[in-house]
Length: 377
Ligand SMILES: Nc1nc2c(ncn2[C@@H]2O[C@H](COP(=O)(O)OP(=O)(O)OP(=O)(O)O)[C@@H](O)[C@H]2O)c(=O)[nH]1
Image (tube, rainbow, N blue to C red; front, side, top):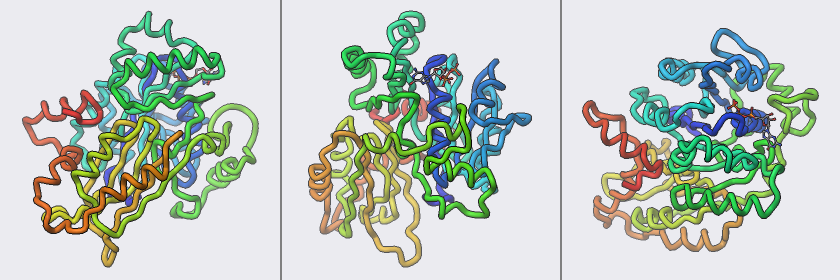
């Protein structure tokens, strides 16, 4: 991941007690060399949550080992904290906001979409659902349905507390409540693959000297946890990996923007994450297009190629129950031997998913984007 690209900001939402902090701890434990900025947006219980995430609490910003920063904010302070976290000095790769169990995630998404901070971009919304309390939560808090409708990825947590039939029933209901194609990932104690949300750097890529906490966390990453008890390091990593498969695609030939968008529109629900770079080679659009999809959420970010860098398309597709050879066949069918003959209009489908800084007076544009999370307007 190029550190000069805007930092993706992922919103982790879910009703009180659904397991957001548990998911976050698991992500922190399995972050590898990735530097995660954490914002805990939890009115009233800041200390409790920040402590369970970080193990230590400062004024408002907490250092998590060598790799993370955590700050506790209310909505009005969010912009200021995002600005602090996105300062180049912290070298943060991804920011996760743990939304209060009571917050309206739509508000937060709107704030992120409208943010004028060029160092960040909205990176999708993950809704954590408590499988054991699913019906009770919906009955008492009908707004839960609205949150599910804007989620890009749903984590169905506490699957250890329901049997297979109940889980299947909830998954069916979730499919009806969420936008079509939204992936639902089952989890026991928040153990989802961190790769679903961000690229993990290998430890060797961590710049600067490793701190003592880094070394402890690294040992923990390899299953030799620093000690008992909850908190980062509790889970170690590796549990979640077995359930996912990843498919890699490389092409020296350009991809047709129309065919590639068509492929993305039809991507199966089990394909949780796509990341990489695409070369379209269409006149006027010869840049390198970084692609980032989490669930239904899709973004392209055009940027320059490195000096002497080969014009390649390189994609990694991560999913469960996906047909790898079938995906590769579909991607091969997107190849375009004569991109220079393509008309610039063929890029329109891609450009719909490029985040542009909001122009003054174009608020309605960012609102329409907020509504779907996949920009299907
Ligand atoms: N049985 C079971 N318990 C879980 C699981 N995930 C989390 N818990 C427990 O559920 C409780 C709530 O988890 P948290 O991660 O604090 O939930 P939260 O969504 O951050 O809660 P708030 O901050 O109150 O909104 C804790 O006691 C966790 O240990 C799970 O998969 N199974």
